[in-house]
Image (cartoon, rainbow, N blue to C red; front, side, top):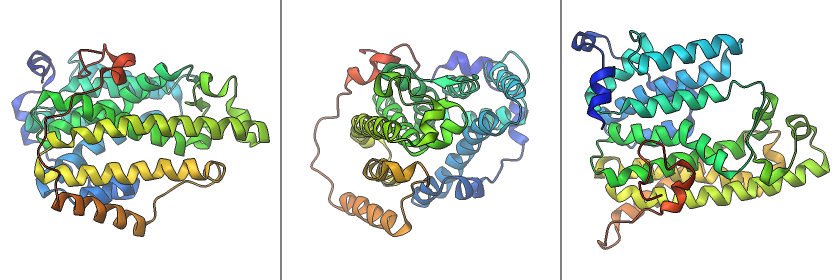
Length: 321
C-alpha cells in the first residue's frame, strides 16, 4: 500500500456513515463464473469482493454501454480526477474509498483500471503486438488482481506479481471469448503480429481466410494465457486459507473457457462460450480435493520477471522485470 496516495485520495472519515451497497446480485447476473466461485468465500470477504466487483463493473459499463463515446470519456475523466483527489469523489468512488479504508486497497490500481477502460473509447481499437496486449490486460484486469489482494487480506508483497498475472490470464481468456462482440464495437485485441491487417469487418465476415487467422490467433492467446495462469497458480500459496480455494476455482473455471474457445473457435464467434454448471462442479470438486491433500511444503515461488517485461513501469509489477 502506498500511504501517501491514500492520504491524498481517501475521503473524510464521515464517509464511513454512508450505506454500503449489497451488490451480490450484480455478480450473479453479470458474471456467473465469479458468482459461482464467490460462494466458497466467507461472508465478509464475499461482500468485499462484491463491492469491488460493483466498482469495476460500473467503470467497464461506462466504456461499453454508454450511447455516446464523448460522454463516456467525460465520465471516466471525472472518475480519474476523483481517484487522484483532484475533485470531490462521487458516489461510485466514495464506495471504493470506503472499501480502501476497510482493506488497505491501493487506489493506484483503480486509476489504471479506468485508464484501460478509457482506451477502449478510441474510434477503433487495433492492438499492434503482444506487448501492447499485455499492457492493456494489466490495466483492465491485472489492476483488479492488485485490488483483490487487499480484499482477500494478502499482506506479502511477493504475492502481487502473481495476482497481476492471474488477472492478465483471465483477460486474455475474455479476449478469445469475445472476438466477435469486440469486433462489432470496432475493437480488435488480436495483435497485428498475430493476424496481420485483419479488420473488424473481416472478423465479422467469417470468411475462410479470416477464420484461419482468428483460429491461429486464438490458439496463441490461449497458450499465452496459460503462462500467466501458471504464474497465478504459483501465487496461491500467499492467499489466506479461507479464500485460496475460491480463487483457485475461479481460475480453473475461467481457464476452461479459453480451452473451450481454442477447441471450437469458429463456433465461439457466433455463440458465447460458457462452462456448463456440471463442468464447473467437476472443476470445483477437483480443486477442493487438491486442497484436502496439499503438496508438501516447499520454498516460496520466484516470479518470472519475463512475464512483466512489457509492464515493468506499472504499479505492483515485478521490479526485476
